[in-house]
Length: 317
Image (cartoon, rainbow, N blue to C red; front, top):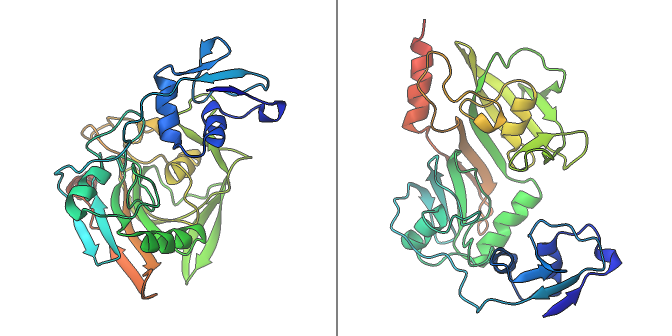
């Protein structure tokens, strides 16, 4: 298959260009072909993230089609709520939500397929039932759609910011001190600090995001629940769902999430054991049931390692 990038395609990622040229294929399958060296740009193998200049000749030598589909695996699940439309899962830290970046097994999706069998197909064969995500090392409540109608109803609420997500985060330092990046707001009689900083990919470290003057708008509200010997336990609410949003915003004001080495927290804080996760937990989600319209409020208890760390900090002299 021979293609030519037009001048109008300049600046476009190679995988996106190919996905537009071959809409019948998923981007995951196209990226598989690129990784296998089956896409040649000019005379060299292409890379998915490669930016086109316009005018390149691109040859695609497809791999034989094999199913890109998640398979069921017997992985334990903590089900907080379930009915015929949806389920709410208490995801542990360390469990990846779905396949990607070289991970094809041992994900939450694999566990969901084993536990529930049929799930919504709106997200594709690799992400059945997945309406929203949590970072691998974030624990807490996550919604799963059992069929397409439920998925679309829940997704519409996320898109319109009709879902309220509340997190608990343990951060370094005294987060009650005023920050020049934040402003005080009162919501339902409670005072919060509001952070409104756009988020974009960090150009120097592509695995990170960064709070910039330009990027996708992002809003994070937080309040201090308790001060704990050099740390602050926060309640956090987000109005947008950008990649790494809470972690990026809190690190930007000098209060990285405990254990989050990617955003500046030490792996072994003085006087504490090594942290094998970062301490961010999706504690509560409030939404409208996609069938009945009734308000749903589902809470995930803190995991043992989180409560143990809090108890240890409270016991420190």
